[in-house]
Length: 480
Image 1: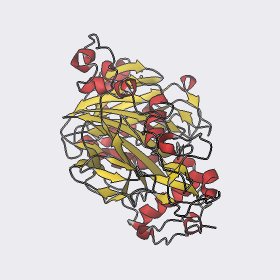
Image 2 (image 1 turned 180 degrees about the horizontal axis):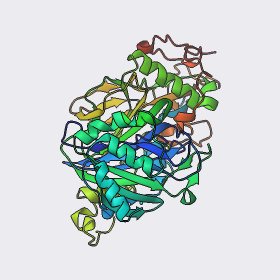
Image 3 (image 1 turned 135 degrees about the horizontal axis):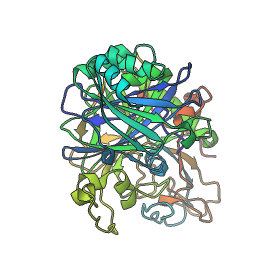
């Protein structure tokens, strides 16, 4: 995936209280700042229950450090799990914007429908501390270890007391922490402090510390993601990816503009070798056109299928890892209580996967995100007759969710024309076979977007299809 979060926004929760939230920031034992630029959060929701999974890494000194995260209740050890990062890689790859290649078929041969859209490759103490904590209005509610994390759950009466507690425990606090913490203390939130044993972590290809994903579960009436505390560790603009899994609905934000990423856009062959750079330029232009204060929908699709597929759909094991057992799925209440799970079913449970993406700073995303159910979207598909497909995303109330960011390189027919009435515009796999899902060439997902180089691609030079929303006229390729 290589887009694992290094943003201390750290997580998302669903809470009934107006300021209910789950977010945080990093504090360090060293005299140096910790920075972040991206985060990923998965929210699996069914009824009033939500299971949140977050994955983080960070840039900073190698000394031990901690995450400080507001939580609505006192978490117990059995409510907190560490996961392997592969499930994040899978969900990111499945929902990522994709580049596909199509070859124009012989216009004098009967057209054969492409194959069905199947999957591709088909976790301090003592009396002195207790007296000190009492004077500061800070109370340790619970303590436990999970994975590389040493977890302490705190309650606090005022933000200055919590800040003092952290400083006395030799953590450097980012500027503005006390002010940022105050609203959560007023709402009687608890604070999840997860100290990280640096000896137990690994680094990614960019030298960033990668932490094991953490999973929490809660009952709540509202789906909300706070972002304010995450800005305390911001070095610049931050990317935020949110994946929401729900049995029947896609989601959008309720308190910011929602925009769709332009899709079914034909591009030049040069994009093949710099797809990530192309996509971040398209994304930035889309966000700028919306005034910078928007959340972009990049994907809304059933988890049991994809078209075309850069990776197999989510299976029962993936959904179980992300919390299906916590919402009455494969494991249900019996699994949450330690009882036996039913065997995995041959057909996995079905969820709608929504992928939301924004890039923000203090000026563009100053309020916590609130989510709401939204009508189905269709867009970014190929037509079954081999033509290009629908022109972008279209809302279809009462329909199904089939929306994705899809970008196309086309290879016009260059062979002989041996018939009187050639049928042009039929597209499929490359000559001689070797096609990918849906009769196309290889499917390339745009991943690691937080590190994709910006400023290397000019959209006006590589976009062939008109994109009116961005003022792009396009440059259609002429048939020779």
